[in-house]
Image 1 (cartoon, rainbow, N blue to C red):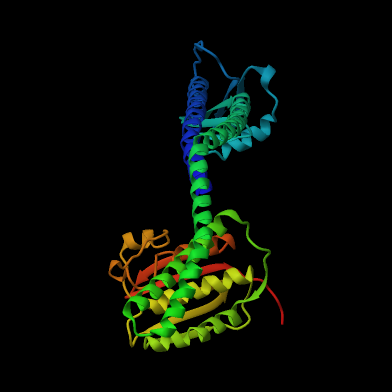
Image 2: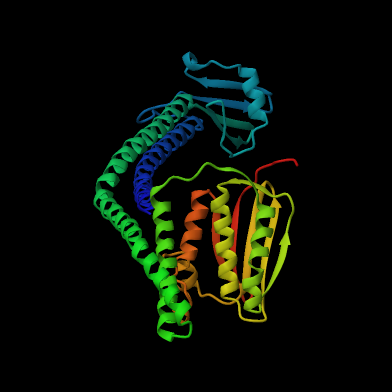
Length: 390
């Protein structure tokens, strides 16, 4: 959780910093581009004059080609020191050039106007400007990447410094939950054992029955808290190939008795030979928790559906049951101690099952999502398959 908070802080900070740096550099590039275009247009306008005037300001190498169609002759005017092209080839290009349309080719910008006898064409050598603009773009990209790297390092270390007190508090809370749960296991075991002995002598005593039931609920809560503490502190076990198809069939079979007691049907559609790479215990726990949750919240006489399919080297494991959840409930469904149905506070559940399922999926790099549509609550687990030929 703390790592997710740190990642969000880094991503949000880098996003806004990146926008600011990109905006500044983009503004500089746009300004340079517009200045270059203005200079090129001025140079073209100067070279398109039949009677050229003295040019004010910085002048790009410019040339004027005048063609007389009556005599089929042309003349090229301009600084001959900059003439580094084939005049006849240039004339052929200009002949194919549409009137009053600016065209650029290899750094040369050309534009021609019609005359009563032929045409006049202005030619501007803008290769230096194009090269300078390319260099500016390259430098801006380099500055952007270097700046983002420097800011990322600064933001990363700053986030560690900011998150440090929260991390210490979070670690202390996890240690307290784990230690308290371990310390409660021993007296709770004694209470359960004593209550069972007393129930053997007087099985109809309502006080003893209530005591034993509450002790069992407490036992489940402690083990759930220990499970979450284990997820927070221990790394994931070594993954290995798992036959998910066979695993789902076993879990569905084991859940038949509980479903029968609730008068709930389990509809299975499980594709064969779906193999994944995961911790077998984690995968068994994940599927069992989701199926148990679906059966628990399905009204009598209704059907729970479990679907397992494979597509494009990914598996899709879907559990669905009749019901409705609001958007707000779906947003909090995987939070610890959250119960979407407030009327079921005494059903033996503490709102930790789906939180454990979410942590289990995350540890094994699977995606777990909840959705509600067409009167059904749907939990979907997706991830990569492991290609094994049997």
